[in-house]
Image 1 (tube, rainbow, N blue to C red):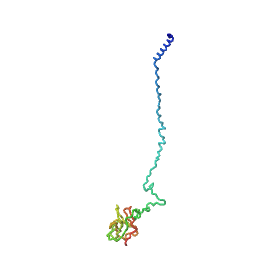
Image 2: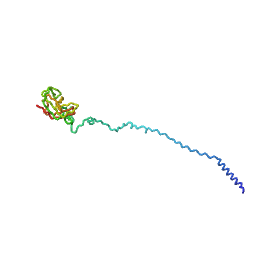
Image 3: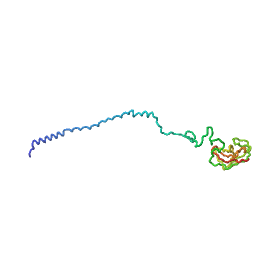
Image 4: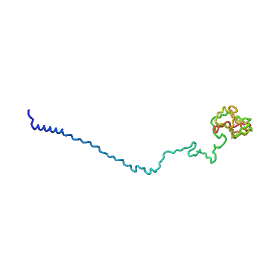
Length: 218
């Protein structure tokens, strides 16, 4: 076996020394990651006087209320507090009374009730009463007294007393001489008006026309 030559041995030795030196050399330090660049945030700019304060014209100008006004009208009275007049009609002069509102004692001027009259017939006959009504709110001695009998099937109870009206005369005192009979006594038959309608009323709202005229014995 032949011995290797000296130059080759030196070359191998140099290579080993170089490899050993390379293993003993520490690694180079790695560069630290770069810090993020700082950003500068500018504060909001102060509002200018032109944008913050409203214009002087807008301040001085009054606000417009778009809500429609509310008008309260009393029942039966047109707006403005006046009474409507039908076309072609004339208003009554000051100090006069309009037609239909003339004061009168005749019940025919008022509206009658829609209920059916309870009176079936009216009888007038002489009586021996010592006193009677004169039709003007007084009870006087009898002159020629007559009884005015109103016949009905039944007389229902009411809160107000019945009043008999013969023309302009009114009789308030009544009695019940028999079942279904309501009697008023007039002090003088000659004072009863002839040809005048006869009414029976309760208060001012309920009234019945019971006869066209009384048949008074003369």
